Amino acid sequence: RAEGVGPGVPGEVEMVKGQPFDVGPRYTQLQYIGEGAYGMVSSAYDHVRKTRVAIKKISPFEHQTYCQRTLREIQILLRFRHENVIGIRDILRASTLEAMRDVYIVQDLMETDLYKLLKSQQLSNDHICYFLYQILRGLKYIHSANVLHRDLKPSNLLINTTCDLKICDFGLARIADPEHDHTGFLTEYVATRWYRAPEIMLNSKGYTKSIDIWSVGCILAEMLSNRPIFPGKHYLDQLNHILALDLLDRMLTFNPNKRITVEEALAHPYLEQYYDPTDEPVAEEPFTFAMELDDLPKERLKELIFQETARFQPGALEAP
Image (tube, rainbow, N blue to C red; front, side):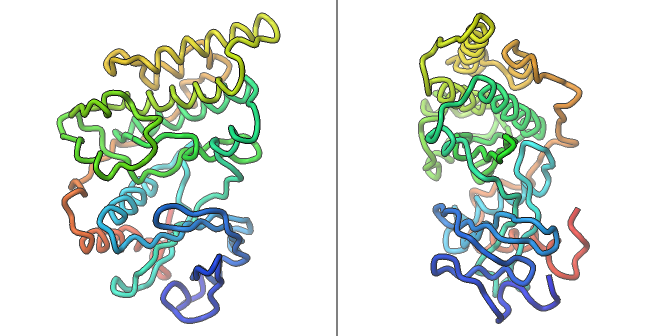
């Protein structure tokens, strides 16, 4: 980015659906993609990397919950590096804490997500198998870092034209800590109920990584149920469907202690053609947060977001 230009600095600011996107001069040619509860997503041309990227504009500072989710997502994604987890390429914000109203998160542009894909077409068994493998490969890495995603659903699985899949939206993620009473999160947890494990709805205090496996089981069932359950074209295809249902049964096991783990799921016969333990990396070190964010006021959360994003400011050491 040119010296002195960026969010909070007057200049040419492109508008997207009436919203200013203060991301020039590095990012131009903005095109609207969609929006969520507290932000809009646009694609843009990155003049440094010479490619189009996705930019998420987040304006969270009025609400403690939005600040919390923004900080959690930034904290986690800046430390994660995996092919099946969306990364952060750049973060733009004002140069002072007082002037910071918005945060712009730059990520790889993915053409679609599994939710849109399932609405538009029926997936072949090959696609289902490959997508499931990538979900589990990403989840293995996430769980190895001691993180629970807690909001896995088709719209949080981004997909590009070459069928690469990346898990996104870590705003509800938590450190896996069976000792900590996580029930408080249900008040702020307004995400869809369809992919929620039974132990969460039963208000269990010590839930574990198995809640994410339940969600993956729901997603697998959705991919499979776009069509008849055993429409095998030939013996091998038929067998694949039966293996998929066996894996599904193990994921949707009511008792979380008996539910299949992500490592066991990757080794299941249904995924045999992709399974390669040497190419399913884990995190270098588990995640620890010095503090639970639930009790922090939004002013403190804003300061933490400001600190966490400092590495991307002009003049800072280049982000890795």
